Length: 59
Image 1: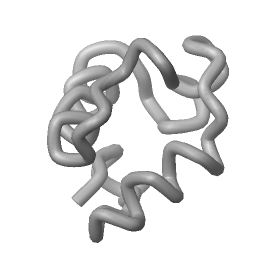
Image 2: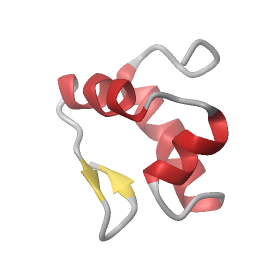
Image 3: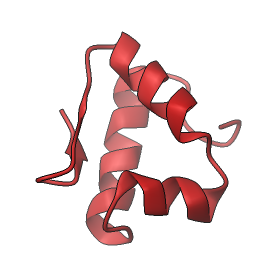
Protein backbone atom coordinates (compact mmCIF):
# COMPACT_ATOMS: atom_id res chain seq x y z
CA UNK A 1 0.00 0.00 0.00
CA UNK A 2 3.04 2.25 -0.20
CA UNK A 3 2.17 3.81 -3.57
CA UNK A 4 -1.42 4.59 -2.64
CA UNK A 5 -2.64 7.82 -1.05
CA UNK A 6 -2.09 7.97 2.71
CA UNK A 7 -5.04 10.21 3.49
CA UNK A 8 -8.09 7.94 3.98
CA UNK A 9 -10.40 10.26 1.99
CA UNK A 10 -7.98 10.39 -0.93
CA UNK A 11 -7.47 6.63 -0.64
CA UNK A 12 -11.22 6.03 -0.79
CA UNK A 13 -11.48 8.24 -3.87
CA UNK A 14 -8.52 6.50 -5.55
CA UNK A 15 -9.89 3.01 -4.78
CA UNK A 16 -13.39 3.93 -5.98
CA UNK A 17 -11.95 5.31 -9.21
CA UNK A 18 -10.05 2.06 -9.78
CA UNK A 19 -13.18 0.04 -8.97
CA UNK A 20 -15.27 2.12 -11.36
CA UNK A 21 -12.78 2.11 -14.24
CA UNK A 22 -10.89 -1.17 -14.00
CA UNK A 23 -12.14 -3.74 -11.49
CA UNK A 24 -15.42 -5.50 -10.84
CA UNK A 25 -14.65 -6.15 -7.16
CA UNK A 26 -12.35 -5.09 -4.35
CA UNK A 27 -10.87 -8.61 -4.40
CA UNK A 28 -9.94 -8.26 -8.08
CA UNK A 29 -8.31 -4.88 -7.39
CA UNK A 30 -6.35 -6.23 -4.43
CA UNK A 31 -5.24 -9.37 -6.28
CA UNK A 32 -4.08 -7.42 -9.33
CA UNK A 33 -2.28 -4.67 -7.40
CA UNK A 34 -0.91 -7.03 -4.71
CA UNK A 35 -2.73 -5.17 -1.93
CA UNK A 36 -3.71 -6.79 1.37
CA UNK A 37 -7.51 -6.57 1.22
CA UNK A 38 -7.86 -6.90 5.00
CA UNK A 39 -5.51 -3.96 5.54
CA UNK A 40 -7.26 -1.87 2.87
CA UNK A 41 -10.70 -2.49 4.34
CA UNK A 42 -9.38 -1.87 7.88
CA UNK A 43 -7.76 1.42 6.87
CA UNK A 44 -10.90 2.65 5.12
CA UNK A 45 -13.13 1.24 7.86
CA UNK A 46 -11.27 3.26 10.49
CA UNK A 47 -12.21 6.37 8.50
CA UNK A 48 -15.86 5.29 8.45
CA UNK A 49 -15.98 3.76 4.97
CA UNK A 50 -17.43 0.35 4.17
CA UNK A 51 -17.21 -1.65 0.95
CA UNK A 52 -20.60 -2.11 -0.68
CA UNK A 53 -20.31 -4.97 -3.21
CA UNK A 54 -23.73 -4.30 -4.71
CA UNK A 55 -22.45 -0.96 -6.06
CA UNK A 56 -18.73 -1.88 -6.08
CA UNK A 57 -17.75 1.18 -4.03
CA UNK A 58 -16.63 2.25 -0.61
CA UNK A 59 -19.05 4.60 1.09
